[in-house]
Image (cartoon, rainbow, N blue to C red; front, top):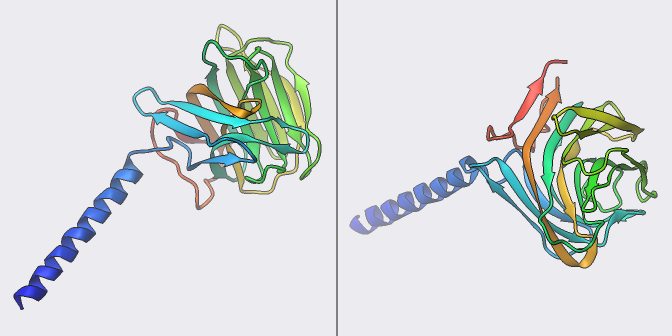
Length: 236
């Protein structure tokens, strides 16, 4: 009887400890407003570090490029249905080498490297583009913004129309291009980094990240933690 009681007590303690660890992982908001962090395509292992105190994300990614018929980059994402707007300030570290290192705010059909997508991308040399791939495995098209060196970016989804914005020094955001890409709900939306070097990595900081939905709920397997730069819904 004493032995059985002892075993039951050990089992109870183990269960409590397991639940505590699970709760800490959930409440801790390891991904901020995002549900996951994934290497897409062929690249060195990347990572995303969320800093709750500042609400910023340090994203480290590799990959030869996000171009042509397939992509290689590190991606922090959440799955959503319906219209949404993603906004962030983007900062490259000093001393980088490849001028075409790339940081993106992106809507994507899937995590497959050949997936259709639309993004607003800023390159280390300061030029900003709306990039999109209309069909799986199709070539990537882009439109370059007339504004160079903007660090505040936005991409907005309205149905199958995606509009890219750049921000001026006074904080005003201005649309510079719109493309049409057919994406089925739910989609992946988030932030990503490509080093433009198959054998290298680069780290970019995203701050003041906001993801606003317009009248639709997140997909069932997505996360919506109420941390700085939190996911929010807007009335349509």
